[in-house]
Length: 170
Image 1 (cartoon, rainbow, N blue to C red):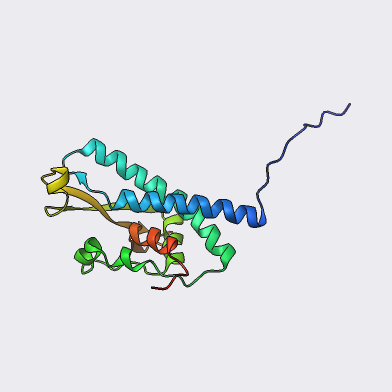
Image 2: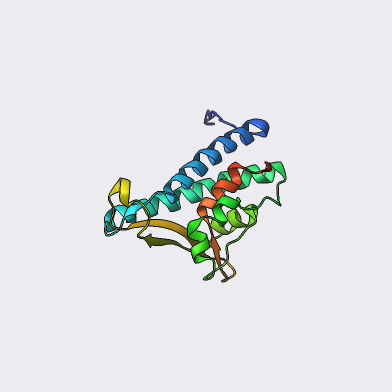
């Protein structure tokens, strides 16, 4: 008696796999960029904790798909986009730590993180006139401890922007 299961298979490969990963990575990059460039009212701990969990989930989904696309393209030299590493927040904190500028390395650091913290900044100048916030918290960077024990900083806005603009020149 033959008890073999009749399994149906859904397969992604070749150009279809790259296209699927490109769509997913681009979608998550836009979401990550938007989440990290939005001001959140300070003092709203529950809201901010929900947002920061979403930032991390989005970053990991983005990193997996983006790395697959970069590997398929053979792209090893893309740098994190200049908007991400030279925006207001990273300039303000540039003296405290340096940001990874290579896109592939930054994405790999997110994927291989053994510990990751989302660093936020509270600024008085943002959000007041329109959003009526006394102060607003915004995401500045990921502080990542690697599987080798070393600490790195990655601009989530930078990796998202760098991915979306890879291969383009200004």
